[in-house]
Image 1 (cartoon, rainbow, N blue to C red):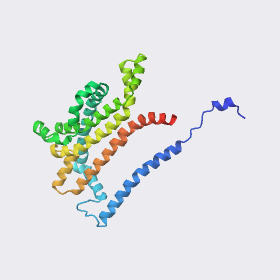
Image 2: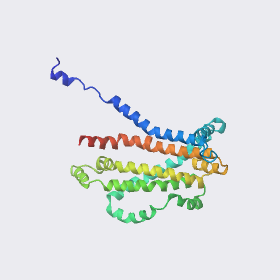
Image 3: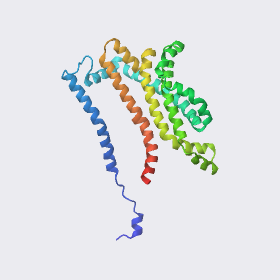
Image 4: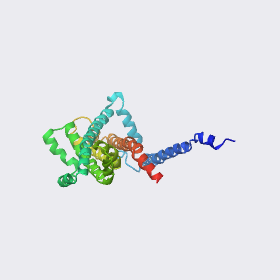
Length: 283
């Protein structure tokens, strides 16, 4: 029989990997099942005549319309609309993060600056970003600059306020302890401020990106000249092209889901959930 020393040298068997894979697969199935069920029920209602197919297209007809618009015969026009919308919304979101995160850290750390800037920010926060579109149209005209600025206003305030709240929630003694041990401002920022405020930051990123994406549609309907999902939906309205309108809505929903779960969700999984989840398990 092996002695205790030999048993300690043997690596522990890796357990739980199949079960984790099974849980992930089950989670995917659990998420997709209601969506697929809704699509099948939707198709059944239209095919059965319980919904007017001229107003509410069947999912199969929407998919067929998408295949037509991504074909070379249509110059891959759907990809052009998607690319232009992604360029506008993501560009606006990056600008919002670049401004809101440093400003949010400053306001979160400086009570005097927060007291001075909080009133004007509180006045601007309730204003819908789309309300600025006519003003930008008068000043800047139609085009990408107007759309990006409107989407920027839709994204910047959720990111800003989430950053402020995340920084203000950090216990000050954590900063004081690190400073008393000789840490410089850079070490305090990356070892305390960023990790502690990251859950609030990611929440702000999700809200900001969602606001930018929703604002994009209305801004493109009003200010786009030729391309964009909002422009496509609005142009299809003039021809009563219900298939294209509903296809645009489905694509907007699918891309929004990808932003939250496949882009920011992955970042959240490898940072916040791993760090804070592991600490809860140890506790």
